[in-house]
Length: 373
Image (tube, rainbow, N blue to C red; front, side, top):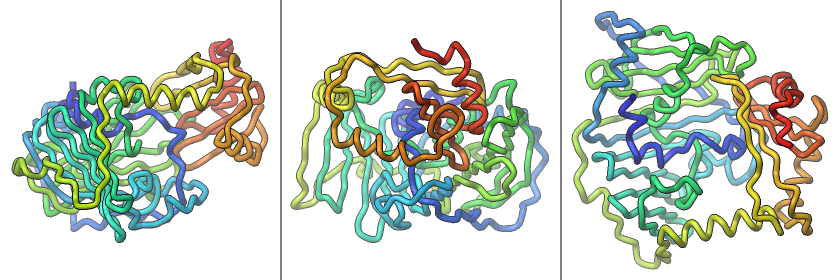
């Protein structure tokens, strides 16, 4: 098992679910500039996979640049390139500072022109701070117990090459072709390149490129390219990195003067999450039915909300219904398509999400296993 996969902090910081949350502005993403290819001893794809899975990380700090060009409709909150709101990571260009010091200490700081947002995890304490709002939320408990969403995630996109590589490695199975690419110099360090290509042509992903530090065997850059294109739709890379263990002071949060601090226990966070679920489904305590159809890159998540609650829809639900009603009709419902994600809202009340073509979603929707009755 990869050391990335086994790291609790990294799994907590960037959950792989919630593809629906990937909604943002289309901003042209350009590959981060790198120096000429270094001359490195040859390594096979199998050797690079072993390197990734056996590499150990005691600590690091560095600056990360993240770019997203998912080809999605513009939303004002998400369009600013220097926004310090963590939800803005789904679009445009962003600069982050990261610190890691063992499995119990991690910090991510998103820098913006108007301020910054931080997520700081130190043992059993987690802080989420927004300098613009002058607010901080302090969670106590273990983030690993967040199966019900007790501790909220600020964003569903990876905030470092390590996190992005962790997700990519989980996708390797017989549906993936693995090869090597060109060597590169990233953040002043020599790197090999590992290339993952889905074999299924229904996948919207053309390839995923991982640049791996030649000495430390850790990812320095991850790029995701849509099928048929040469430019990444998503890229996260170090522009500077130091593999020394950061000072303990980096993981201590001292609220600035004027900051409103809200302490939230693990039980309170779970109750808050359950309350939000109840608001989304008035009059019903039933959870949505779900199923995953298919395997590998072409797998599709199918959801059907409960029919039990028939109360009047909330304002948020009305807005969502209006937005769905404006989507193009076809394939048995309304479709939403981007460079890497397709969504189908069927006429019978289901939602299908996958990194596949709209035609593949329609095919899955007709499968009896996706009926969720």
